[in-house]
Image 1 (spheres, rainbow, N blue to C red):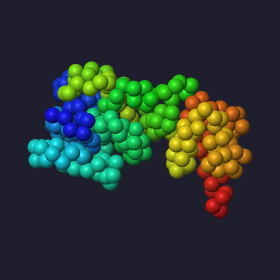
Image 2 (cartoon, rainbow, N blue to C red):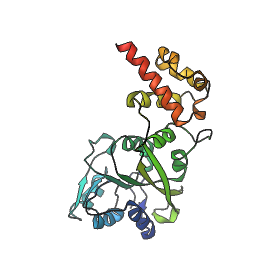
Image 3 (tube, helix red, strand yellow):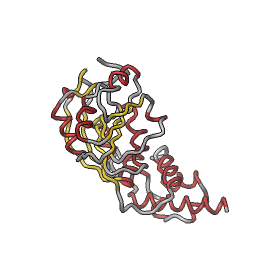
Length: 248
């Protein structure tokens, strides 16, 4: 069975890796995105107190409905959904929305997340400054969380077999992140990497010319791919300060 480009996880060892990594108890409320045929859902339901399974495909959602007493199936597009309250996210994410949903999840409160991604996506998620894969996703992941690789996933773990390799990671919230205006941080990181070959000061000036006066000149000379997290936070705070002046 394959719908909407889905590849269904069928390898029991990988399911165990995911569920064990989530450290579930009956106190946990879990969000699962893209449950598909419910192989992972079944393992989550056996350990968690409650599971919200968000499935966009009506037929797949219908097949899951009523199978598990502690699972609520939500048949909606997760990107358009007002997400329910949960403390953990455990999912084999639909790869085509990995970036959008990850950025959204990172900005919400959570205790722990165990997520499967395409391996190339994991490289972007964990990339360091100066590397080709470093970008908006890397900065957001570093700001909001710590990322740990749990296991590599062979293509044969899915049916039908995909053309890409996968990996499972565990994310824990970064409780020591430096203070920053969230709106300025989001706007800056989005803009920086649409201008990644230019100096960072160009992106800052494009958003608010007055921010250039408040930012570190040495940092503004760097290209976005060279910036550390602390330097991005500094630029975001300069942007926030400039916008506050404009609106005061």
